[in-house]
Length: 331
Ligand SMILES: Nc1nc2c(ncn2[C@@H]2O[C@H](COP(=O)(O)OP(=O)(O)OP(=O)(O)O)[C@@H](O)[C@H]2O)c(=O)[nH]1
Ligand SMILES: [Mg+2]
Image (tube, rainbow, N blue to C red; front, side):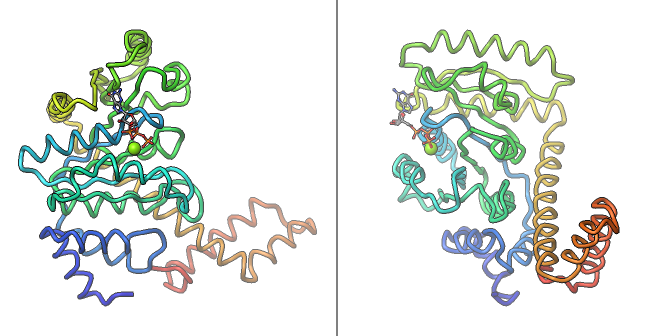
């Protein structure tokens, strides 16, 4: 564990634009590191209104190519960009990320662009509590933050809660729109990008998508999502500003409907929930190795108590331990 002064210095270096410092902070923030709470505290004075853009969609639709394009157009405005590529597979798989790195290679020499891959899965399962913390680090250090995730399941839907604007990328031949709607992947979109518009099948995809979107709009209560649709060919440099223009429109729309703060509160709520759940889980694991949990289990088995009553007892013991700072995993 680093001393507190080191952390403060590191945060100041990162906010000041030192890539190495940003990188170190992200490593500390990674799941279960004891100094993560200190980093979080040191970041608080540096909180600012950074645009966070989420880019998700099925594997291979062109998310990284689009991200690279977006980075280029943001850079042409002179803004600094932090990119987080979230790997949905196991914490150990690094295969998919190599492709992302190659796709974003053109920005490798640009010191105002920072790209980092992180794992989506926490050590205890579910969305890693470190992902929102990583976003928070980048928010303090850059003008725009982009989070790329592969949209395949619930944790990716959760990741959408991290962004001010969520872009769902689709492409002809990469999955059925109706199935995606059922999986809940489409409803998180603020903006749909139909990429690979140079390929066959783009008109069918647009027609299906627009049908699903109009149904969604019909059922949705209140103006929470605008859900515009644009088409792109991410491999063509000429497309550079198409996505950024659409994102600007959405940012203006959010402002106009007074939704920006709500999005940020939603982001904070997710972060808070993940950290709390992780602490409770760690606490529970510690209890399972102690005396209380096995004793209660024995009582249930003998018919001396019921599981609900025992669970209430366990929760009481946990909150007492956490409040007294007596917990094995207290921060
Ligand atoms: N024809 C065509 N190919 C494209 C287009 N956009 C991206 N590609 C190609 O599609 C392939 C996949 O692109 P990526 O950007 O890696 O896709 P991705 O969605 O990031 O993929 P994962 O991160 O693996 O899920 C690459 O070979 C790209 O060059 C496009 O608009 N048209
Ligand atoms: Mg990618």
